[in-house]
Length: 171
Image (cartoon, rainbow, N blue to C red):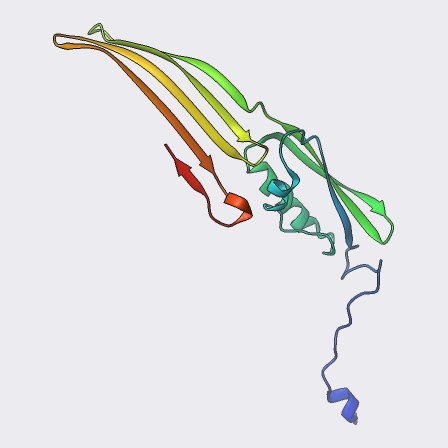
């Protein structure tokens, strides 16, 4: 079959018109989060592989849902597609965990040594997935020349400091 010069030219892909499906999936018009009373949207968006304007590929939607779940900040993460003008809206429904956890620390052994104290863990500080840990303990070694010993620990961790790919942690 004869070919014309037009047949040998590469075909240029035109972007889809506004509201047209992208590939075989509709276009994601909007991404919305509900149930995140503490966690900021940008923390979750950082973990997502799908963004507004992308095709609503179920595999990418599930990877995004799992990425948010893997943050460890939520008891449950679900997502559903809702029709929207020009495509679909993704609605991520979240159930946040408790972020402030105080608990006592007690320890004793058969040699008579004992320690007690308290620990406070505050996860997702400022809604940015920062973590603070404060620990205070007092121990009695029950040995000659050694009395009670008091120790304190403060540890702070901030991933993605100022929205950069860098984090900081200090104790």
